[in-house]
Image (cartoon, rainbow, N blue to C red; front, side):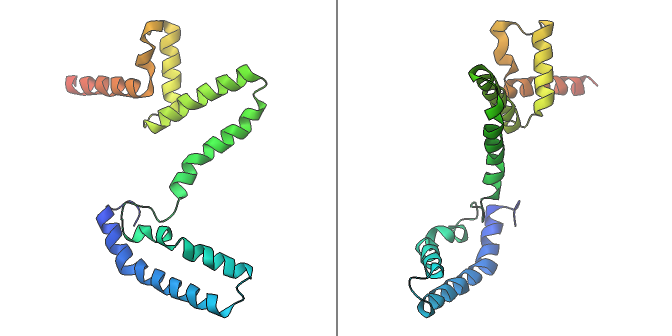
Length: 158
């Protein structure tokens, strides 16, 4: 279902997943009456039932993902970067690391290969093609737009 339209996902969820969730809630409620109220399992079941509305929200809105895998994958580099930055050496090194990480992740978020963008941006600065008052040209989204415009002009000329 991932990668399809919200309407398609919603229809599939209502047809296939909603009945499963109804059975799960029934099973949890029944199990809760059969076990000790102070058991860890009872606590877990009460927790799940207490959050049932949020847990099943994806059944009412096809735009909502069933899991948080996408978000967790996008956050993983932040945690790794934080751990790796412990070895930056000093405050200046940590600040440089943070700036570079921010620039590279901004490039990724704009659909730009970070290595290609950084290599080209540094080359333009070193060669003098971009002066210090023109650094906004090197922002990932401006760089990408300029490359796309140049490719369109090249294609039209061919």
